[in-house]
Image (cartoon, rainbow, N blue to C red; front, side):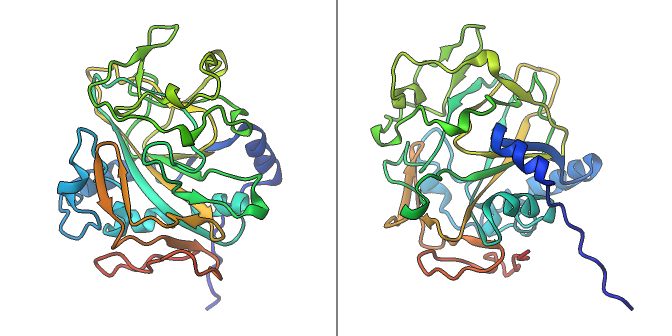
Length: 315
């Protein structure tokens, strides 16, 4: 019997060119809508069991904002397979090259009545902890940030808090992450010119602005309406935000973000713990995941299986 041909999801050269121009690609389908709804109903119950999670829940939930939902792909077989899905990895490697790590995942829930998330960009992810979490090599210093693949596990609509992007804004950083922000869980958030209330998980991202008088051009913003099972790929340096959840008759909006970098990037350099959003977690059991190609570098600690022994399927 002939070997089955492996299906690929590599974007066309025109799609890659459009990505470089706009800073994002998609939305594109990763799961069928009914399949995603079924999987999420099952997995959200399984994820309540944190006995094999790599971060201690008590430490992570020390503040009002929870960072215990970081990196659940390191104990969940479903999420481990998700970050390695060819629908995702083939698109990521078309941008980053053949050798790629997933260095972090995060859940982004938005419940009924939740405010919008403020406009922001991320390069080294030092804005909260004060320490760079990813560092590109000097010879590639024109690059920065991470590729984020944000998957809608539930509907992301205009009234449930969909993402918003300002196309082309990834080329210029308007924020200085080295300035740092002060965590204020009870901080009063602000409204934009259209009366939309925005915040940033207990921080004021405007504190990082290089020019305190600069404001994002929200007239250029586009909304990323997505069905369950669809995903969007974008540079973390792209100006992005999300709308508030104002639909009282709709379920919570749940997004799941995988963050990807080439293997040459240094992940958590000189860092043994993550301290942000009012919580602190030890990186003792942490490891980046090779999702495609090979890693000929030695500066990043990696894992090949989840804490329960499920192997990551390298592309």
